[in-house]
Amino acid sequence: MTENKTPETNQIPEPGAPKEKGAIAACDPGKTQLLPAPAVQEKQDASHGPVTDSAASKNVVETLKPLLPPRFKPLSQAQIIWISLSFILVFLLVFFWLIMQKQHKNKTLKQAAIEQIEDVDENAGAGARDLLKTRMARQVSGPEQILTDDEFAGQAPMTVKASGPVVSAAIDPELAAMVDALKKRLLVSVDSKSTSSGNIVTRVSRGEFRGFKIAVDERLQNQVRISEEVAVTFPKKGFIKTVNHILDSFRDSDREQFVSELRNAGLETVKLPAQPANEVCQVQLKSVGFFGKPLTADMLISGKNVGKLSLGMSTARLESILLTSHVVLKRKVLVNDTYRDVYKVLDQSNEPLFFVYENNGLVWGISIISDIYKTEKGIGIGSNLGDMRINYPKVNVALSDKNTPFVKIDGIDGLFIIENDKIDIPKRIFPNKTKIISILIGKSLEFE
Image (cartoon, rainbow, N blue to C red):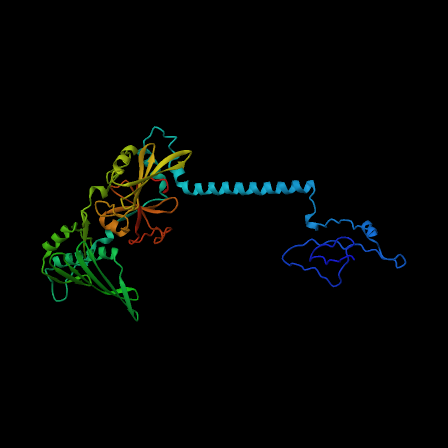
């Protein structure tokens, strides 16, 4: 007797094997299975009787190849060529896009540098200093605006208080004008605090200027000053007060002592000539020196020098000076197919101090970014335009070709670059509290 075996799940039964009714192959939904084509069953003729094993072996079902879905249809040669060309085209587009991005970045970073040294080949025999002079003229966009210290002169009416003069009718207006000059210098560097009551605004300013403690109290109505009191305490001894620009009190000192203390603070008192039909006394305080902690020679900005470095110095000399006391980083910048050296100089604690730009082996420019370097009158990064004006009788304010505002002062061969978010470029308005953000002695690759 022949034993019938039930085929295993998902196993294709061999030809001629008996089929078990109701048997269903298990299906794994996560796995794609290749299902066999159904076997061709011959209709059994009842008259012929059962089919023998030998007959079954003759009716072997043909092996059927699985059908491929339409997406796996073999590609023609033309289609393969077009797909290959498409891949090549996309690759070339990406490659050229990357090249253009790199060129755009280099152009942005070196746009100023290219124009600044475009004269190098034409003036191969000229030194770095000649190049600086020719390029300086190209930096300014439009005429320079000259600002003087006239607006910082103190003013007082040629009168005394109602109860009589404090010192004398001739000296009281002069002392009051000196107080007004100190007040104006204080307001350059301090922020006032205001309170309102109806249409009356009270504005209070407190601070110190070169050792003089100054208090200013103002009352305004509809933005018009209706009263003002200014009190000044001297560094050593003395007190003076004005009310509405008229001397109100003066004690523990005299005029000569007041002038002496101003001189000790680096200020020279200059009484300006009276104007015809102008009943006003004017006194100017001229800055004649630096007030505060003395500057060392290594921190001084003067002429073409920053400390021990100077324009036109060889880079070999530069390196010998800096490497013993500073951290120096050197890199190359490509400008017009020529590499230029740029030095980044840091102190021993890795605090950035300045950059040095090289041209033909010489120091071309020094860009200061640290506030420890100052002029002989104490002007450096963090100082404002008002500080410059009260220390230098005349300053030149201008804009670069890219509308970068800068200031030039006598005695310094460079530019003091100031903030551009507090100025009105079309009207050439530069508020006194506009701060210096960097100082450039000579030239640089970035600024134009």
